[in-house]
Image (cartoon, rainbow, N blue to C red; front, side, top):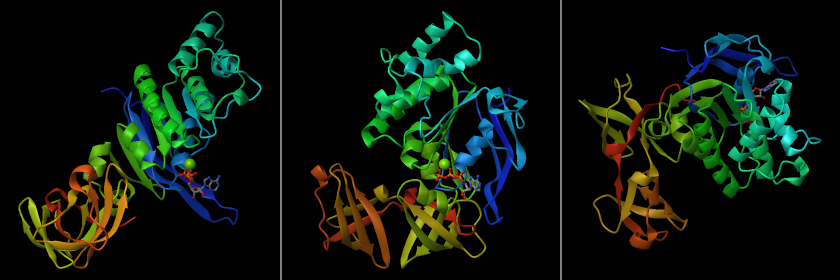
Length: 361
Ligand SMILES: Nc1ncnc2c1ncn2[C@@H]1O[C@H](COP(=O)(O)OP(=O)(O)OP(=O)(O)O)[C@@H](O)[C@H]1O
Ligand SMILES: [Mg+2]
């Protein structure tokens, strides 16, 4: 088997804050990224995403651990000897250079000369849809165009690794969505390996082959988007990725591949998962789109909040001692339940997922 495109091997980074106290920004992180894979580092502000990316790029030295790119240990190499390219949130274009020269920069540094230089810059600009804007300076471009230049500049040298740190967060929602699609197209076209940092779970879900969820410097879970959503490993992942009803219960009967769980006066039958914890306490992850409101039904509830979103309706519904989030999928077909209305509720316990409650966070 060939070496992974990137191996992050037990990386730890400890900073000293101004008062001299230790800040563990990255805590024993190990991750292998396959060639051509698009991996997203996802987590809340301050969880260590940027620090981890900067260590991979070579802008930061780890306290412990190694960075291995395509089988080569690069932990002590400077950024320009790692054959990686980084795209920043701030774009960081050279303000005094025009678009052509911004993109050409990395090639000139590597001694690429005309006519190859011109051809490669043209190719990179075509890839990001900026052909014709070669002679503009960065301040004559929109934010989205500047971000495209930054992307063209990063990929023009065909780096082994493309590292992106929240590159779309300065764009408006519509443009961000459009750039997501383009970014993924470009990454696929070039077959380039990408590591993409974001705190936006939708961005990670739509872009990545695999998502690495981080919290407080540690990896919580590494999985493809659909698996992360369906089978979060911890309460933290469940709550960070998508909306969730996280219900605390106690396993009363463990019967093969189904568990009976007592929660808030209800008895739920949920898919089993691993050994039953010694105290029987578990978290049951119920996604809002699996909670359905109807006119009738044996399990009764009261609608406490209705939020109309056009294509769907978000509800908060009270069922006994439980307060559940629910999503009405098609208000045009199903109508809208009003606040205070009594409804029948079905809860998708059959597709729920159990998480351990210990070691939260
Ligand atoms: N140079 C530094 N000196 C001291 N502490 C630092 C330094 N750089 C980062 N930190 C701390 O390390 C932790 C991780 O920071 P980092 O920038 O990697 O987080 P992040 O996940 O990228 O957050 P964000 O989503 O806000 O960009 C934070 O607690 C931060 O305050
Ligand atoms: Mg950051």
